[in-house]
Image 1 (tube, rainbow, N blue to C red):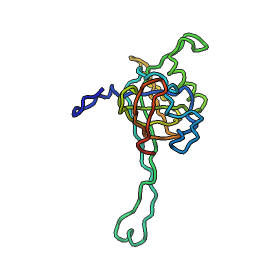
Image 2 (image 1 turned 180 degrees about the horizontal axis):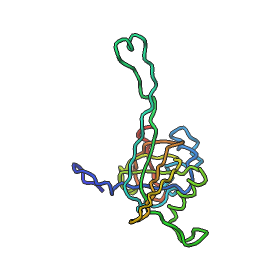
Image 3 (image 1 turned 135 degrees about the vertical axis):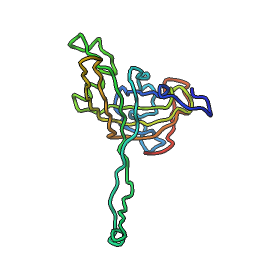
Image 4 (image 1 turned 180 degrees about the vertical axis):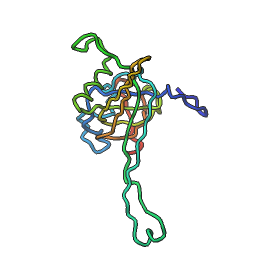
Length: 189
């Protein structure tokens, strides 16, 4: 857990992969609460710690609303209307020795199958372990893309790019007293 007043190391951040995709929001957020949502901690795997660098962000989407008067003055007016949510990270290529992938890393296989099947996967990126009160981060369903780096001398590395497709939220962990931890929305994304 980070010490107040100090900086945080990147390795303290955690990435969690959902057992299933999110299909609801808690009833306190306008959902009926009966489906799978981020508030059900048992929905999430343990932290995916075999990844390398983790980047969270995205790009701004703007719309041009420039008037003729503004254009004559040499300016364009482009307010930000949304952001493209994105999580990127690297993992080592973990080939399976079995055709059924039974001996491979389960999280790697889940990402590989999501990419090959063009399916979504639920991801939650937190700035510390979810067991820590105050852990916060980005959650949602993401589409996965893989790019391989296959050096002649070196380990094969996969660049994973996860692009947000549904149920985006920024959350903070209130408590972790059971496998059904309680998260609170601090801002709708």
